[in-house]
Image 1 (cartoon, rainbow, N blue to C red):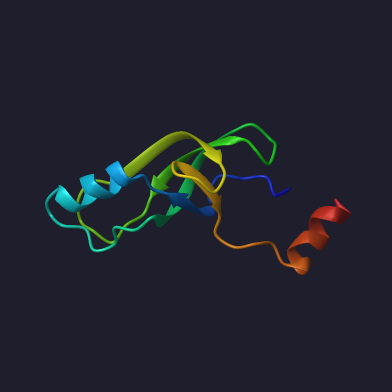
Image 2: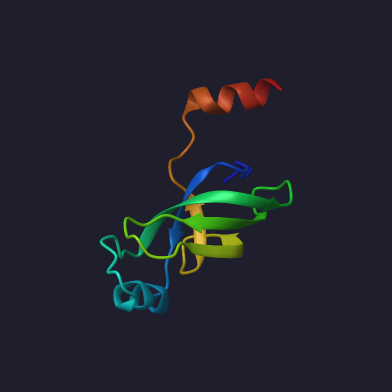
Length: 97
C-alpha cells in the first residue's frame, strides 16, 4: 500500500449500488455494469499513498462517462485500489531513487 498514485494510472473503482442501477437504466444499456470497473486517474491531490484522486471510470457502454472526484483509496464502495500489485521488479527502481 506504499505505491503513490499518479496521473495515468489504471485503477479499479468500486461502484455503488446506485451507480450500477443508474448505468443499467440509462439508455443505451451498458454491457459492463459491475461492482468493480477500471478507471483512469486524471488528477491526484497529494503525494502520499492515501492521496485523493479524480477518476474517469471506464465501461463498455456508449452513454456518458462516469467521472468521480476526490475518491479515497480503499476496498469499499466509492473507493479505488490499484489494478495490479507491484512486482518485485517494479519496487526495485523506486528503492534506488
